[in-house]
Amino acid sequence: MAHLISFTTARFDVSAEAPNPINPIAGQSVLLWLRAELLQANYQVTEPDTEDWGWYMDVRDGEVVYLVGASADAEPLDAPVEWIVQVHKHRSITDKLLGRHRMAAADPLFALIERIIRADSRLQQVSVTSDG
Image 1: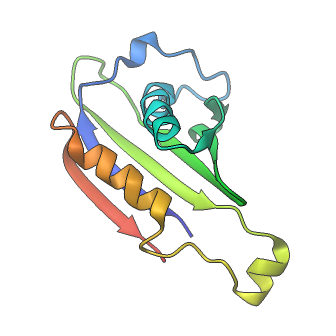
Image 2: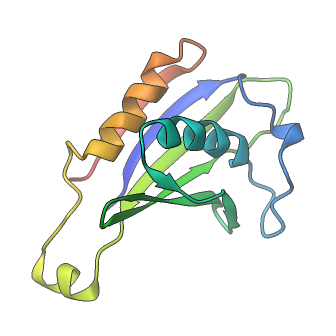
């Protein structure tokens, strides 16, 4: 299940992002910022890449792997943008069938991302949904 954080900000320059060749959806700038923060916290993080719903990166903490995604409709460019950051924990088919290793509401990576976002005063209207 998805764990979501939404917020509004004009902090990120979506016009400087690489174009998403699949869909014109922003997300790279938020993920580059989060990537730097997660690397400082000793997570292994891939470079952001595109998907039809936005941008994503894989984050590894030991044996646990997550997909962290970001997306926003950045029109018009002169207004604050509403962003969605989503976190999914990768689980094997066996884990899913047996109901094992679900992402908990208090998942450490999700909690860290939430703290990073809440700590930046330029990000407003922060809202969290955890389907743990």
